[in-house]
Length: 265
Image 1 (spheres, rainbow, N blue to C red):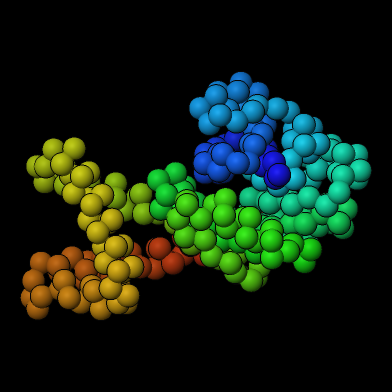
Image 2: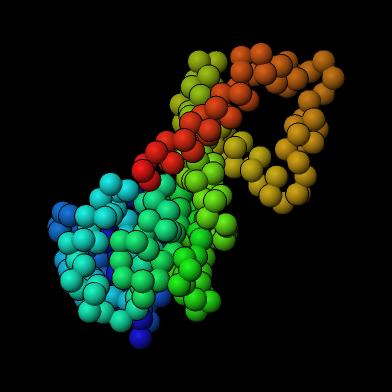
């Protein structure tokens, strides 16, 4: 029987723990720098709060939800445990840290998967991009998919594309939230209640995203369908183009990718 361990219960680690705990056939061990947080989450998920050491000793699938500058220290602190264990599957969420770097931090027999989730996993509408390490097996991939596919869309990518996926899908929700916030704020300025303005903005973005996904039409085509000649929508679109909306999104995503790459160095 597989035992699942999650070390680091920040925003993403907690969501991964919640998703993994749905598989009641797999015991789940939770560890966090603040042990009380692990205890509280474990009570909600029918999991077990333990120490980092106990996760490395007992789990054979371990999610590492720690920051890029912490992962090597964590592995070094538990190197003596990893050296005496049979091959286990380690799954990193550390932005920018490559599979080659990860593999160099442990004995060669241990298998690695590099993943990058995003926050909408919390409502089963997330995106997880992942790449398999050289030692990871087809069975590892199947276990990974089984554990996480209920969280949304899971996409396997060449590792060279993971940083780009991190910038687009990992950071992208924050950009979308700014857009929703801006729509709602202007709605309030035009006389709508804050509650109604936020409801309209949220559903507009959600519905538009569903249109792209369901119709499979390019966003440019869908945009043109909304823009009547001489109408209000095209006037707004022209304003967005004139004020650099498109280029701002592109530049924000590029900078996010650049920062992701820097974090791994």
